[in-house]
Structure formats: structure tokens, C-alpha cells
Image 1 (cartoon, rainbow, N blue to C red):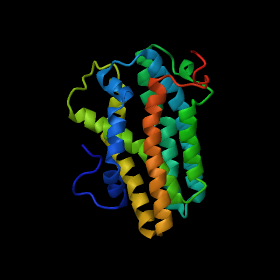
Image 2 (image 1 turned 180 degrees about the vertical axis):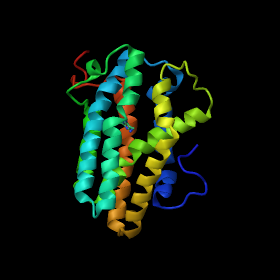
Image 3 (image 1 turned 135 degrees about the horizontal axis):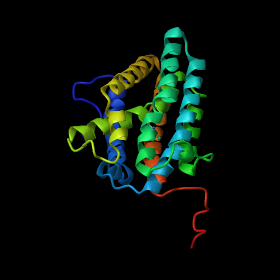
Image 4 (image 1 turned 60 degrees about the vertical axis):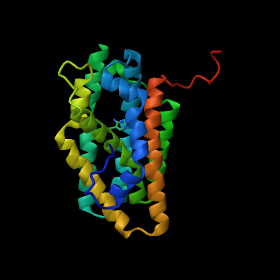
Length: 234
Ligand SMILES: Cc1ncc(CN)c(N)n1
């Protein structure tokens, strides 16, 4: 199943089609499989929550970069609304995972980003020093991969109320999320229609790198990645 409907047109629809294999790698990663099966270990879930809280803090900063690059108040409104959503709402998804792990959200916080999470954040911040379109391209896989995965999982019809990660899946599958993603894709489609060949290339590169980072974020949580030098435990 690819992340774009057959009748969808536009720049981001083409991006989704061209890189559907990466979306599939995201969906099939063992961490997300564990999220579907409800089989993840508590420490993996908590590692994810701690890292993701820091990641989303950086993501909000990137919206701030978008605000600075905004050509008008309509664009500012977009970033304003988006900051409010991540700042005030997305914690609910994390809370559902903390409930599963029997830990308070405060206790799940960490100060240090793991290498893969740090690399993702660095990539997004760097995109914010390019154009508004490149920044949006780096930010787009974050909502797109999660919403698409949640809708796909729900469509499979196996998410019961008693699923250990029900709250997390329900958060990302909520129909209101769809309009947020549509808005972001629409804005990037608009910018891409005005971009020259060199910028279009940078836009696609930023998008592809972020989907790769999304997959690596799962791997980071799955393997409990931290800064322990590789090989030091052997
Ligand atoms: C790493 C990551 N990517 C995406 C999402 C969904 N906004 C998230 N919470 N964290």
C-alpha cells in the first residue's frame, strides 16, 4: 500500500509515489511492527518517548524557523497553529505510552538526544537555513509517515480498545490529523510549483533524508541506541 491515492496529483503526491519503498520500510520496521502487535518491551517504549519528546521540542524550533521565513501572515498562521498543536496536543500520544509502561511522563524525560535522533534534528535545522520549501520538505515526513501508518493499521481492523498502544494509534489515526497533513502538503505543492530545478532537487533530497531518518528513529528506539561507543561492551 503506497501513501498516495491513485487520483492524487501534485508535487508531494509524486514524492510519495517515488519514495513509497521508504514508507514501506518505515511501516515494516520491527519497532512499528511491535507497536502493531503490542509486543514492545517497556524499556523500548520509554526510550522512544524520552527521545521523541526531545525530537518534538526541536521540531517546534523548526516551526519557529518557518515563522521567520514566512512571507505573510497566512503562512505565520500556519506555523502558529502547528506550534500550538505539537506543544499542547502531541504529548497525549506519549502519555498513552507512559501509561502502558507504568511511568509518569516527567520520569520518561531525558536530556540527551541519541545519535540517530540528533542526526534527524540536525538535518531539519539545516533545512531551515535553506528555503521555506526545503524546510517544509524536511518537516513533511514526520506527520505523513505516522498518519499514513495509523490509518493503514486501523484499516486492517485489528486495533481493539484493549490494545496496549490503543491511545497512541488512536491519536495518530484521528481524522482531524488528515487536514493538518493536507494543509502542509498543499503549502509545499504551492512552493514547489514556483521553484526552479536546483531548488526542487534540494527539496526532494531533504524529504528523502527525513523519511530515512524516520526509519532510523525506529531503529534507535528498537536498539535502545545511546552514546556508548560501539564495540565497548565486547
Ligand atoms: C520522530 C517522529 N516522527 C514523527 C512524529 C509524529 N509527529 C513523531 N512524534 N516523532
